[in-house]
Image (cartoon, rainbow, N blue to C red):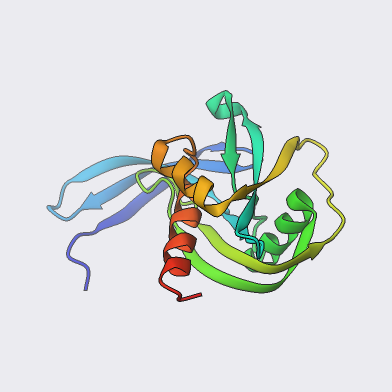
Amino acid sequence: METHFEKTLESQTVYEGRVITVTRDTALLEDGTTALRDVVHHHGGACILPYYEDGTICMVRQFRYAMQQELWELPAGKLEAGEDPFEAAKRELTEECGVCADEYISLGEIYPTVGYDTEVIYIWAARGLHPAPMHLDADEFLTPERVPLTKAYEMVLSGEIKDAKTVAGILKFKALLDDRKI
């Protein structure tokens, strides 16, 4: 049973774009007062950690306009409305890394920005990798690189990797691998 709650009393769309919709909501708080809440609605994303038997993973370097810098990331992409996250993750693996896999392991889901955003990112690991045709979207520019998992883990700990889904995916995968749970 949840202890704390907020109930939406009214919701007004204030922006509708290609990737997000923003609403301004009036919420009833648990003490009976109300508050305004701006909410970014997003269809979510799918992320995949490609793991090679030699202990390397495939990550991509990609410029992220909103952050105005090139970032290290696991392959990922946004979901279309109603799209199956697992199918999207498999698609991103091929599109961005040029491989497909024999085995997929769910690493769960994360809520990257819970204060104002509905985005959920679903994360998988992929093993048993073999080549497939790489095919980026027309407006997508990135470089896939194989990195030892131990180095990627060190990059997370040092702060070199800042992307939330990548941090979560690497930490969880390494912990499961170290504990021999996968």
